[in-house]
Amino acid sequence: MTEHNDIDHVSGTTTTGHEWDGIKELNTPLPRWWVITFYITIVWAVGYWIVYPAWPLLWNHTTGILQYSSRADVAVELANLEKIRGDKMVALGAASLADIEKDPALLALARARGKTVFGDNCAPCHGTGAAGANGYPNLNDDDWLWGGTLDQIMQTIQFGARSGHAKSHEGAMLAFGKEGVLKKDQIVTVANYVRSLSGLPTSKGYDASAGAKIFSENCVVCHGDAGKGNQELGAPNLTDKIWLYGSDEATIIETISNGRSGVMPAWVGRLDPATIKAMAVYVHSLGGGK
Figure (spheres, rainbow, N blue to C red):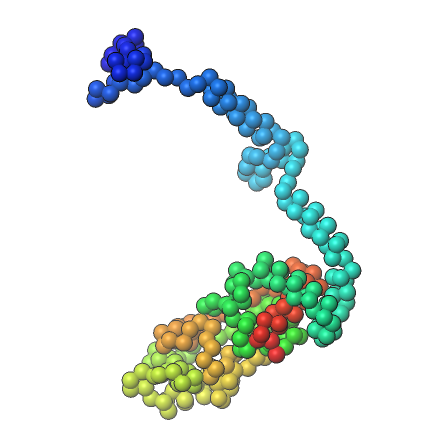
């Protein structure tokens, strides 16, 4: 270690006395203006902690002297927006679905409102363009598990599917393998039969007659003799080449073995009736509604 009054010969600056592997530390304090600014930011932070909500607590957080809340600001802005919409939303809520589609002004309002609400609430599952994803229906096509008319779409939005609501759609795909109804080889056979219904290739050695027999004994009660499905039960059409979870053999085997029971939440009580109506109109207008 060097002495504290040591002078660096290159810069002419006093060193701190610290040296590592021949490298000396110069004694160059921070500028006074920088130090003062730093202390001011500390004082500002303490003041901010006192005035605004800041510190997380075990169950809540400190509210601050001003008790400011950005959430409250948003609530006020939304309330003001509803006042602006006012009569228009009242008219939308009072009109029937059929009347909304006949009235250009109400139809435009419903589509605009529905699109906004869809983006906020439905896009995380169905996508911003409503094209769906694996396990989430595409709302642009003409394939509907529970029906694609205006009234059917609104029913689904209101009460959901397997949502726990008393009026929810409740149909579910049985787990034929897990419940021991079918053996593994039978599941493989009927999976190939299901693929054949929509013209997909089957595995080598597949027994079509055996597949048809297994299907008729276990699947027709929901999907129908021809595999066209049943919207009252939410049973999909197996012949239209539109697949919610996938059409490859392994995925179909997984579906037959362990079942499917995806959940669509019920929006009644979470969204006001006029907004639900607007969302039904918007979904219906995407192109797949009947």
